[in-house]
Amino acid sequence: MDFAFGPEPCMAIGHDILDIGSRKAQAKRQRGALGDAMSPAPLELGMPGQFDLPNVEDPARYCRTNFASVCGTGDEHQAVKFAKGTTTLAFKFNDGIIISVDSRSTMGNYISSGTVQKIIKINPFLLGTMAGGAADCSFWERNLGMECRLYELRNGRRITVAAASKLLANVMSSYRGYGLSMGTMVTGWDETGPQLYYVDDDGTRLKGRYFSVGSGSMYAYGVLDTGYKPDLTVDEAIELGTRAIYHATHRDAASGGINNLYHMTKDGWKFIHAVDVNDLHYKYAEEKKNAMAT
Amino acid sequence: MMSSTTSTFGAPLMRHSEGQVVLGGSGEDAVFKPADYPGREQPYEHRFSPYDFNGGTVAGVSGEDYLVIAADTRMSSGYEILSRNTSKLHQLNPNAILASSGCKTDMDQLRSVLDIKSKIYQHNHRKSMTATSTAQMLSNTLYGRRFFPYYAFNVLGGIDAEGKGCLFSYDAIGSFERTQYSATGSGQAYVIPFLDNVIGNRNHTEEKPTLSKEEVVELMKEAFVSAGERDIYTGDALEIMVMTKDGVTKETFELKKD
Image (tube, rainbow over the protein chains, first blue to last red):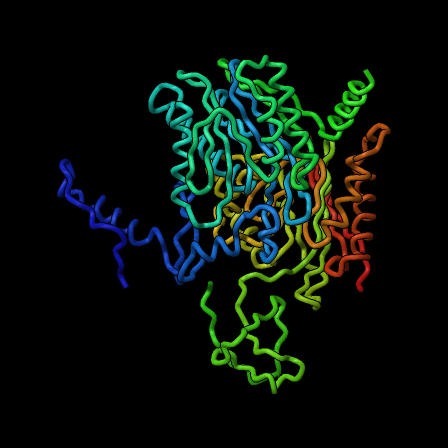
């Protein structure tokens, strides 16, 4: 049984008619790359692999029904639950971008970790946030980091935030319908200034002034919408970012842990703080009591 | 959905750990007549599930210069115990030990694939993989099966390049994090709160004590004894491996067999 997958190798200009070896190798690669049930494709290390799909009529439907990273309780029927749940936010202001996240990850009802790093450092001038499926976010953002580095090496200059977010959005588009779950914000400072893009698992890519993503995003938006002004000072902006996350973790069960905050400046990102939201609770309660007393 | 195959059963109904799918109204597909099985009002259809849950608990604690990783040795399926002495711990290279629980076939296959990758790395680079590299490799291997996951919950422990103990906990598709202590498997919810309290010193006001590896080994035994009391899939025996820069020691501790 001899199948040929894909188009026949064509005779391009410069394609040596006597180079039978290359054509044979190409044909063999096309035949053997996918493999079949009886003789699976050999493990070639160092070569980019392909994702195995379940051997059913509609793999996309099977995957999103059984292996999806769904937020809340949508995955109760699944045998295997994946880590997710979160609140992340980012906003642009005159002095850069503030990125503030929580650190809880849940698997069904179980809190699998209270110390997840939801801010992924793609390079010294690009940050990505993680919301949705933890593995999906960390894998694809790490992949994005690799692509950004390759871009730098090939082109001799740093990639723009628009291009980086586009690369990620295209990947998400191509896996649309397979049950991936990722809501990320790609932020950076390139030659056009501070940029903030929201990228989603269905290929949505939006440029904006501020976003909040995750199960606790509604609570964060409430605080963010109230306190946001483009001419905030850096300290006020940090305080706004902290407070928004605190309120989200207070009300959303799937958010909590530690608030990690970064500030994106024209010299790159800067780590600001990692504060336990429990401590913030008592700090704000104290402030409120003092404010009411005076 | 996966197309279901109609199955013919001459023998009495075999209990399947994945359960049965109840068919309402598609009487043609169902082979079982309600009258044959008194007490069952609706016809059932068996659906093949590629996964089975074989149970077991796995835990690890990393210290200043040591790593303690432990796993019970019971393998079950449904309400049956299939084996009382299967090992869930596996040393991948001189710097890392993998402990996994979940579906035994997926654990074994994952172990084989990682062994092969470790060996090829060793041959290509003439050195063993560091623990942090092994951790990333495991994450990528798991994500490579994002659309048909390995049903294996892993904890990877080792000694990192600076000589400090390190521990990484994973979910089924490769999301990982370096932590000081971790537990996974059927008894996760019984072991982790204990470790949070004693090792993480969570919600305590006094100073966090530094523990020696002997103390940690004793704590692990306590943790598994408690887990075995309340989790049916944990018990029989406990294997503990302690890794330092000088090597690995293994100890077996008997647990209750009920």
